[in-house]
Amino acid sequence: MNPARNLILVGPMGAGKTCIGRLLAEHYRLRLLDADHEIERHTGTTIARIFECEGEAGFRSRERAMLETLLGDDDLLLATGGGAVLDPLNRALLRARGFVVHLRISPAQQLERLRDDRSRPLLARPDREAVLRQMAGVRDPLYAEVADLAFDTGSLTAGEAARRLQHELDLHWQRNGATA
Ligand SMILES: Nc1ncnc2c1ncn2[C@@H]1O[C@H](COP(=O)(O)OP(=O)(O)O)[C@@H](O)[C@H]1O
Ligand SMILES: O=C(O)C1=C[C@@H](OP(=O)(O)O)[C@@H](O)[C@H](O)C1
Ligand SMILES: [Mg+2]
Image (cartoon, rainbow, N blue to C red; front, side):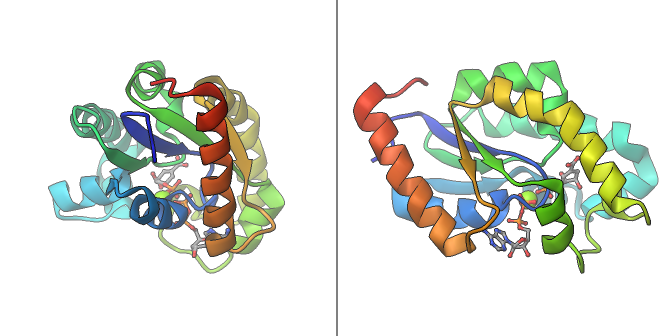
């Protein structure tokens, strides 16, 4: 049972927001929405192409508008993109509109998990490790700022991570009740 209005996943690229989100939505019977997928559906193109045509700033403004629209609803499992927390307005919105879980993963684990991934424009460069470390430095405090709960996914399979996270969420809600 999820007592919050919405369950929202934040965290770095490759932490498992999209894939663990799918499993949690099923378990809690929430409507699954992935902000990136919704932007792709709405624009009829890929995130990579949006970055190519409009730059990161263009993507961020679409992301901002999409989060505002999606979080107008209740009973959602919302998987955000890794950079959603960069905008202070997004951070305020996420905190106000749901129970926020920070899925954690180290840059080394991200590198390994996303080794063959070609869909993330910010990683389409040779110095991926440096980029991931630099992002972690900037973003980790922002994830921590919005999160009601942090959960390490690094050493687990997606299925195992989802099962353990459900258990932690149930315990947390039993002890504290809903915060959103
Ligand atoms: N806990 C996990 N263990 C192993 N692989 C995972 C785990 N979570 C996700 N993955 C894999 O890592 C990749 C990125 O996962 P994804 O859910 O897209 O992350 P995010 O949405 O946070 O960027 C996918 O190929 C997915 O299958
Ligand atoms: O970290 C980021 O800035 C981004 C993460 C991506 O989502 P995932 O975190 O789901 O990979 C996607 O929104 C875009 O490529 C930018
Ligand atoms: Mg994702």
